[in-house]
Length: 262
Length: 262
Image: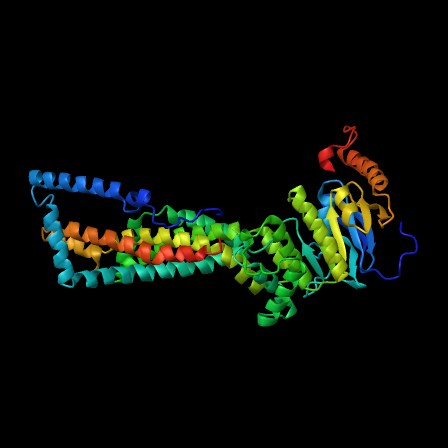
């Protein structure tokens, strides 16, 4: 938990190549060449050439489809994700108070963790039919155990000595929670959110294959149905970009804030 | 042991008994006179820390009573009546030194501006002027422990309890801290109970030195230390008695006291 040296962003010409990920870019460029050659060999249906994918992507953006479907996907995953985070916080802190609850939560988390995504997708279809609720529910059920185990770990990690100090100084229960327990758990909470959002995004896209008519997952399947493999690739790219952007714009700042005192 | 004890003690322990499977405290009685700096010495083991926890009201005794200014505090009062300095600083790492001190003033009904002012006042007193805005990780070990002392003093307790507060510091820093304690004691006139396993430390700062017996602990003997006391001779006397206790605690097999135990 302690002593992770913060990466200092300084302009060092020697490390500029690293910062710009030049080696990675080089490999990607090589990949593009290989991709191009393979697509010549197998044809545009199996493997559309990079140029086609790019123009497909431009089409998605200019037609406004991008916003509709990215918005729909983010809306669903957002609801499921926020719901699961909230639930894990409530349940996790219940576990902080009650030892029995802690044991039950740990066991249930283990069970939930071993459930396949597909179980939730199929059950959601049965329970909620063709609606938004399917992907939301699926995201919720997948994010929940990850968050629960992180919050649980955070609660376990609270320094007993600090709690004892708080007791010696007769801090109220609320103050002990606010000033000792909660701040100890927050780094675990943020780390869990980072991991589980990525997981939730990947999972809810799968859930969108069924029951809904918007979203990145739906569009990928729709593109496949209409034999537009180039658009399948384009939407896959969109998914990657969304993931990276959320990571960089939301979770990076959040985890920096959470550990600002270190 | 003390002839002509004054009628009133600042802190009095009466027949304290405490067991954790094995008896740890056995009918331990101590009277600490107002303004006294009592150093409690004893062989390593649970006795000293348990005694301090009972005195701090963190652990109820199985039997006996702890009286502060004549009032029983074993019944868990709402306000801290003793200030505790633990072996480790026990500062909340996500709060600044000043915030750490101010937080523990909340049970006294002090918050905001008034708490901040008092925190600053006591940080000045322990020689941390200007360091209030620093987080614990930005302070040295000795400074952290002084911030903890400031916190203990800021609640303006009747008694200050210190549990081997400098045992983890290097010898140089340790000497500085000991001097700081004596200085603070002179300035505030506080009644201080200082638990240590170092005879040297006890004689350097204490006005009285009490020797605890081997487990189950009771007060074996105590000595007044004043300007005229021959510390060398007293140290030898205490050492030989302490050695007896160490031998007793180890059983008959250990012939000589281990230097580390002292």
